[in-house]
Image 1 (tube, helix red, strand yellow):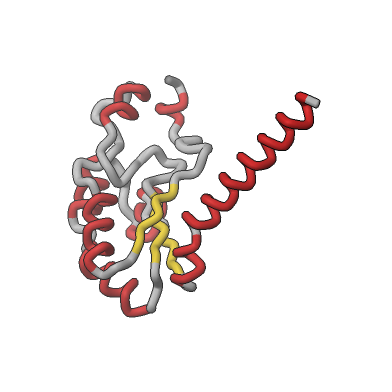
Image 2 (tube, helix red, strand yellow; image 1 turned 135 degrees about the horizontal axis):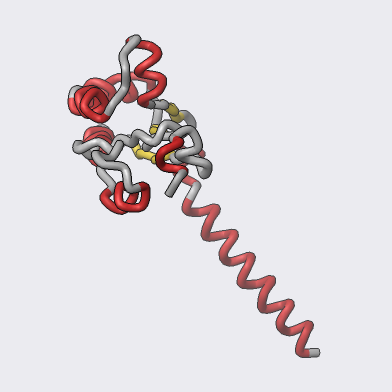
Length: 148
């Protein structure tokens, strides 16, 4: 009898949690359209044919036009944008002293500018939500970071 009650209680808790998660994500369905963008150091190095290091990465991040990008996203009618923090190279678009400390890399590969915060502000002014993306395997391509 106790087992049946516990099962019923657990089922009810799961239903409530599922319902709440559906409510939390309802805005995505209402937005109908979103855009995903990867802004990655290794891709930028290949595209621009440059040797990537933290100085070059900071120049790229510092010169990123968040207002211009937010205007472009707005022009598409998208209600949200998914943007990468970084991926496999170990270079990231936001400062992160904890990550730098854990990897032991000095100078670290995290940008000085918080591009995510700046982009979020620019998109918010246009009523566009931001989802930040980071793969679970990062920084698999950074041999130095993997040592630590």
